[in-house]
Amino acid sequence: MPALQVPPGVEGFLSLVELPDDAWRSRWDRIVAPDGLKERLLNFVLFSLRHRARLDPVGLPVHGLVVLSGPPGTGKTTLAGGLADRAARELGGSGLLFVEIDAHAFPSQLLGESQRAVARLFERTLPDLAARGRPTIVLLDEVEALAVSRAGASLDTNPVDVHRATDAVLAGIDHMARACPNVTFIATTNHEAGVDVAFLSRADAIERMGLPSAAAIEQILRDSISEVAKADGFDARALSALAKACADASLDARQVRKLVLRAITSRRELADDPSHLRVEDVAAALRQGR
Ligand SMILES: Nc1ncnc2c1ncn2[C@@H]1O[C@H](COP(=O)(O)OP(=O)(O)OP(=O)(O)O)[C@@H](O)[C@H]1O
Ligand SMILES: [Mg+2]
Image 1 (cartoon, rainbow, N blue to C red):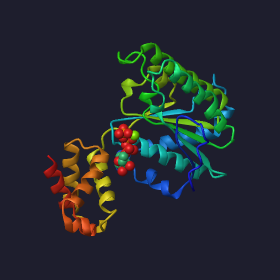
Image 2 (cartoon, rainbow, N blue to C red):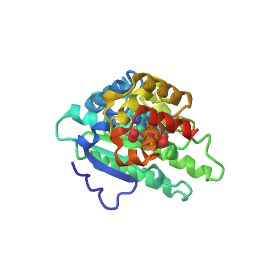
Image 3 (cartoon, protein in one colour):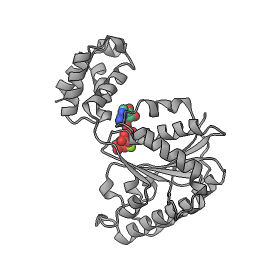
């Protein structure tokens, strides 16, 4: 499905797409997460999108906000998109709107302006989008840039402005929770301590994606190598030793996939014909990288 046009003059939208989209399927299928995490996320999003409108906010307060927290390269942004795509498939109907907010579009050093822009986003732009009546998922990627911790705000930014902008985000999230039950937020951060505590406390769930285990790395290596070579010929012992070495080196999942790329591009024959890539080539790339 083609990307929808972001309405002209809309500030803060990085992209707006309609899901499901077959090109997005792998964002769900190929991200390896700890047991149960994907299922919990999907259950939450489906519950929130289907039932929030009918819930009494005192009886069962659901803000429609889930936070994915973890180190860089652990799949948070990719999985957020995959989750939206998967939810769109489960919901059926006329499709889901997925909008990605540019958290860096609201620089807090502009006196009062970021506060006003954030307020416009949550009080006008997003409610206008929600008024289309479609299930809608809003990705607040790198939310530490938007809901800046008021306690830890750096001294070179104007603390009053940081306060005001963060206050506007909190008020905005509360407003959306009341007024737009068809909207669910997914926020990501690789710096949870930099996110305001009041924002985190509004989250219905905080899911933490840590560095991948050796077993997860093995799965990722197999998946990455099979992108270019036949996976059935892999030496299982060598693969599991390599996965362990990657885990010992504390590689994140992105680095694991880049390692496979490095192995391919380290030799001209493989760059020309990567179908000959073997586990040993990737192990050699890891040794060379140290
Ligand atoms: N858990 C994972 N399983 C499989 N592949 C992964 C995983 N995490 C990351 N990757 C690979 O790394 C790419 C980049 O991941 P992504 O950008 O989603 O990470 P992130 O957690 O959002 O990082 P950052 O905090 O730096 O924004 C993915 O598209 C995928 O190829
Ligand atoms: Mg990310």
